[in-house]
Image (cartoon, rainbow, N blue to C red; front, side, top):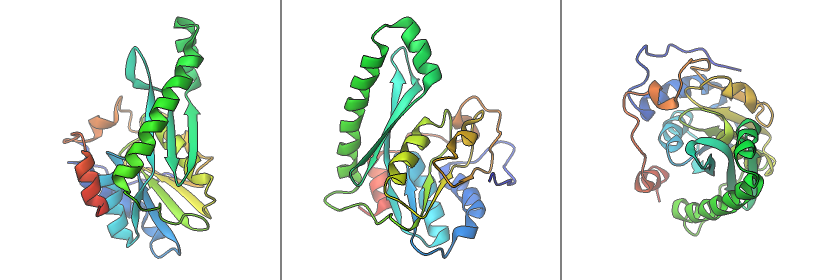
Length: 225
């Protein structure tokens, strides 16, 4: 579903402010047995932390790395995610078709970039969860939270990795979506909660008055590491 909320005309002040709106849309999951909130580092974690507090649920992370088109790195050609030994790679076929038209070795370069980003996923898992396993997922209700959906590639990679661990219910949640990104998440999600699903914005950051980079240290603090 797409939760309709009263979104400020100028967007949210910051990620914590957006998290409060998102938590209202997710309130029905409060008290669900085995409930777990997973934030996408880095920017999704401040949103997820507010949701976790509101729903009295534990907070953890599912690490995702975007695979950018080389000439425009912010444009996702795909993404790779990992958690508890699972890996999921998703491909943005529209971007990849364009990449192939410009470079005959596009698929090989994509595969090499995916391997590189997977190594970074593993490194960041250790940074954010040093020496400890991921929280249990199998049989529970898992809500995966980001600060917004642009192409949806990173969220789809995160959902794909989590789905392999067999949660009973898997929910994708973000305060805002650009274009039709939210519609691309079912499946693998069972439910999608996006207060501002049809924003008409060209970029996620336009939904926020303050949208600075979240640091590893901030993520660790929110996780209690």
